[in-house]
Amino acid sequence: MAIEVKDINKSFKTNKKSLDVLKDINLNIETGKFVCLLGPSGCGKTTLLRLIAGLDSPTSGEIIADGEIVKKPSGDRAVIFQQYSLFPWLTVLDNVMFGLNLNNKSKEENLKSAETYLERVGLIEFRDAYPHELSGGMKQRVAIIRSLLNHAPILLMDEPFSALDMQNRHKLQEQLIGVWKRFENTIVFVTHDVDEAVYLADDIVIMDKDPGRIKEIFHVDLERPRKRDSIEFLEIQDRVVSKLDEWG
Amino acid sequence: MIFKSDNVYKNKFTPVILPIVIIIIWYIITSVLHLVTPYTLPSPVDVCLSAWDIILSGELLRDSTDTLFKVFAGMAIASVVAIPLGILLGAYKILEDICTFVISILRPIPPVAWIPFSILWFGIGTVPAVFIIFMGCVFPILIYTIDGVKRTDKVLIESARTLGADDTTVLTKVILPSAVPYILSGLKVGVGIALMCTISAEMIGSSSGLGYMILTATNLFDTGTTVVGMLTIGIIGLVLDYIFGKLQSYVFW
Image 1 (cartoon, rainbow over the protein chains, first blue to last red):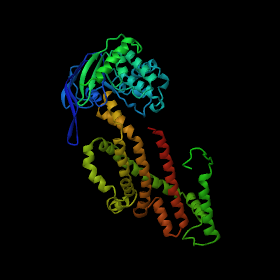
Image 2 (cartoon, helix red, strand yellow):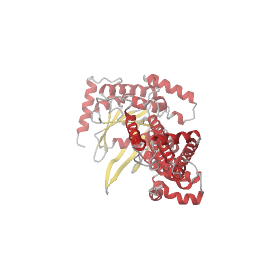
Image 3 (spheres, one colour):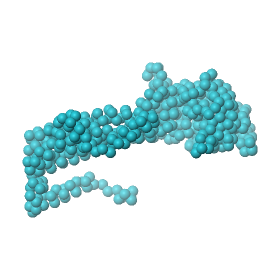
Image 4 (cartoon, each protein chain N blue to C red):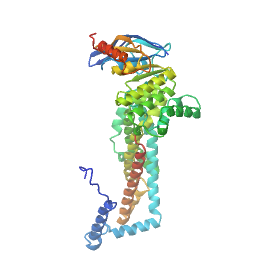
């Protein structure tokens, strides 16, 4: 599913003052692409993601997903949040089946696909555990599975791995690429970590702040799986960093 | 000591020491030294005898179940009204704004102040008592439910929406379970108030129950039975508190 962002402006009003969070954003994301929104804090990357999700509305402009104007959240655009977002009163299995149980398929069918997915990411033995019994990395994996099971063609991810330690972060990034290749989702991934963006993205949307805007769209032309210690990887990383640091 | 985490002592009998000491002092004052007349303060022996009498006659059981029935009936009606209302008021700001004045004015009125009207409207018996209990515990349950709904983690609501949930699903599958611990706290506060209301109501507009038993026994200078009635109320409160404490440990989130 393609996403079209057209002339988006977003401002918040605070004590009589109006603050431009996003200014004149135009962006086309093709179906099946992995796009990272990269920028310093305050550049509006999370706001842009929330607008695409339909969780907030733009001050002006419109966002079109799969030919339709985004007006409210939908199961087609799953969001994986930075904060852990599992339902604490449900077990892992019931959590991943939350979206599935909203459709009209049979219970057994849902249960079967949920178990298959949990099996695949090595969480099957935690199916009856509650979220507070899981580590941070496990919680985010469960959240990702919950969205995948729902067959959301678009995954919107808001710094989902930022609270994890480096090993776990790298592992989940690798798994995410695996998932994306298998299911061919369109992914929009917000991050402030250059390494993460270069490792994951087809295209990096470099943003800047005051007001939040797109500075440049950087295409990452590297074979996958990408090697962090390869010269090409480090070169691209360097170029992205210098773009970020340039005075807009 | 609260200040030290180690040095935890373990003795199951610590809680019963003080009650035993109190009973001994009570016994000495009333039965050994005869410092007070029996109708001013009955001795523990008198209390035990009265207890024995009304247990055998079935009076204690009858009045206790009568009181408990009123407590649960009042609580049940209050819950049926307050929990759904609280969820709506917590979820929709406009509804809360509409109701806020009425709630803020009705809430501070002590439930027993409704006794005159309850008698005028419902006469004497079980119904007016249930009404008083309802008035007493509907507000704590309502306020706690509203609070619980408002404290629902925004991320959970947004997650549910992006998983395709509509308003009704969000209310029933996210907001309600998230508010359950708060609702339980409201019920726990409510049940204490309900017990107090029942006794007051039974003392004025009723012809059965523990409150009625206490009042009639006192009028007959049967103060032993009065004390038995009081202790029974205390024990019922203790048991209800324990049950709600247990229920609360099941809702760990």
